[in-house]
Structure formats: structure tokens, C-alpha cells
Image (cartoon, rainbow, N blue to C red):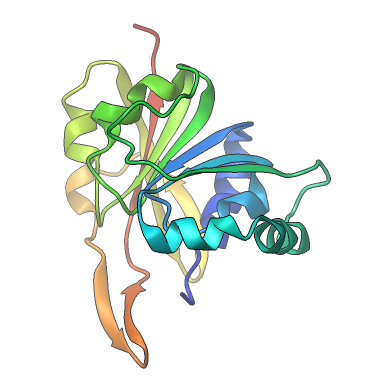
Length: 187
């Protein structure tokens, strides 16, 4: 993919500095590890399993592109996020819900109180999260002229839906989507 959301992760890192990230339905998208030094990737897809099976290649790619000094830590769990993942509850600062969608009911338990959820307008958990009383919307993250910013005054109804466009080797996302950023509150 030509669009890997680097600037999006850079913004999240600068504004909130999450220490640990969980990424269900990650496919082979490892860009979060370029900005966050502790990421757990989860996907049941065979393509993702094959990609992450080459641990030396993944680690080398991360180390060549990381934007931090600490040692990188990553783990891949080849499972469906709907089943027990063997992870400690309330142990992650950031949940990425970018491709899988509708995963909040299964993965909410892994987010610390005060932790964040980043979801997109493409496969959004937004409707499910809005129905829960233990999450508060921090704002929409939008992109203008290749720069992301957090709009905490925007109405959710103003967000744009992502679109796909035909490219030489398949489909590609058009970068006009908004992201919803939520904080998990104490119960």
C-alpha cells in the first residue's frame, strides 16, 4: 500500500505517547511499530501468518524504520480476535481498529482505563462505542494537506467515508477518511 498512515501514528505518539498497542485484524500493516515500541499484532489470515513467520525480516524492517531509540518489541498472534487471546486484561494503552471493524465487544477488555481506541470511518467501531457509557470521544482525526490534526469540536456527522479507487495492482484506499479517537473511562 502506498498509504501507511505514518503521519497518523506520529500524531498519536506525540499527543498521547501510548506505551503498548494491540492491533487486531492487522493484516501485514506494521507501520505502528515504526512509532510505538511495543505492539501486539493479531490476525487469523494466512497471509498475515506467513508474513509474520519471517521474524527476522519483520524485525529488520521495523528497526530500519522505527522513530524511537528503545528496543522494539512486537508479537504476532495468529488467532481470531473473537476468542481468548491469552493476553492480560487492561494491559494496553491503545487499541487500533482500522481494518477488522466491530471488534470493540471482543477487545475492550484489553484496554487500560484511560487507554485509547483509534478507529476509522471505513470499518468503524464508532456505532458500537457510542452505545457504551465507559468511552468518551476525544475527537476526530482529520487530514488536510498531508497533515493530521485532532478536531475535538467537530460533529460526528461531518466525517467522510473512506473510498476505494482502482490502482494498477488492485484497490487502494483514498485518504479522505476520518478517524475517531476515544478514551476508555473508569467504570
